[in-house]
Image (cartoon, rainbow, N blue to C red; front, side):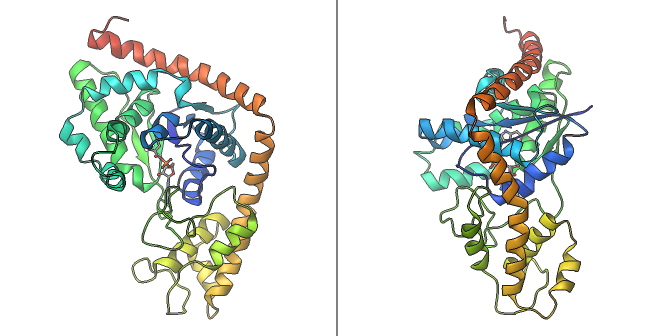
Length: 330
Ligand code: TYM
């Protein structure tokens, strides 16, 4: 089977709907056809600062949400990044192969560092995409299912793999990003031209997987739409309504056209009510299963350390080759 690698940051108590639609729901389908590695990337999460107790809790919560959403730990390797030291080691190596200008062109760094100011943004935030490249390359992954916002990072990963291979001999598989059409970017409900994000300034437009049903309902009913009053998909002219239709479509498995037809001549309130039900149907089982898993943290930790053992084995094999090719004593 070809190898798949993907990951998420444990940067909040709950994943958000964009993570669920753009990434997690793809992963669960793909795990059948791939030797899949799903990582909780806690080393990435510390690039913007953290509360230690919170980070530990969020790491377990994120792993639990992977399983609750359908990642099967018997089929896939679901592990925590900090339990596999090769990630940090290969990241250092790749740092030495990355141009300063090349790293400076990463748009996510530009956006995020602006929020902190250039002097307080950490060097770790700057080299973040290089650690991500290490994640992917250690497992010789061919496929990297991610949302649109990660495209540039996977491009950098490809460049680094190709560069290493040509300088030191064929070592890495050059991976490909797998970005779903149409659902690769879910937008904030209050600001439907900005992507839904765990780090959004206000939470009013953010649907969290683990929020209680009434909180999610309120957010959906208050979602920004437009004055036109017609339910049709038009991303440019009607970003709010189009986002609601996208979410509705992907979670219900129905086409946008069939939803437009069902709601033809009706108001936005009706569409929102329908969406509340569709969202609740998808998220309620995830929420319940997550709580069950978190009730037995010892079992969860046992699963994670078993997976880390497997990940260490694969990752260290690659790292051995890398060190040898580069002339680093091991
Ligand atoms: P992160 O934690 O920000 O997001 C996890 C995944 O969710 C996708 N995503 C979205 N998709 C659609 N609409 C949205 N609004 C939305 N918001 C987030 C992201 O594209 C991502 O796929 N750098 C990565 C984590 C990472 C990684 C890796 C991913 C580290 N190493 C190796 C793949 C392979 C990140 O910060 O994702």
